[in-house]
Image 1 (spheres, rainbow, N blue to C red):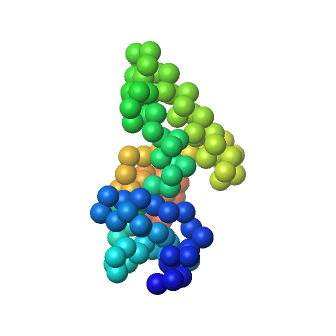
Image 2 (image 1 turned 90 degrees about the horizontal axis):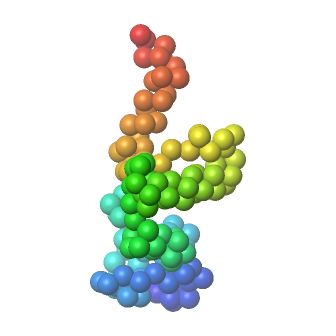
Amino acid sequence: MDEITDSPMPLHKHSACPGLRPWPPLRTFHCRGVIYLDHNATTPVLPEVRDAMLPFFGEDWGNPSSSYRFGSRLKSVVESARESVADLLGAASPREILFTGSGTESNNTALHAAVLAQPEALGA
């Protein structure tokens, strides 16, 4: 187990497993003799992501699509994130970036877009 303890990956905390560490290169997680592979269900959040999101779980929450002031103020935060992701992925426009609420919604959106782009592929 020395290769896990000496891992260069950052330490992740979890209440059930305070010494949780990623096991490179597979990014699986080892804890008390258990290797966690169910990343479809849940994945540990990187500390820098948690720190960036923390204000929006407490003091700066709201619906960014709403018309009230503190909700609509968050729209600029979402749009800034959209621009950052577009730059990171090399998208032609931030409008190409869609944020969804789940993997299922993402899959359905992608499938719907594919059908709209090539309806002949369905034989219609």
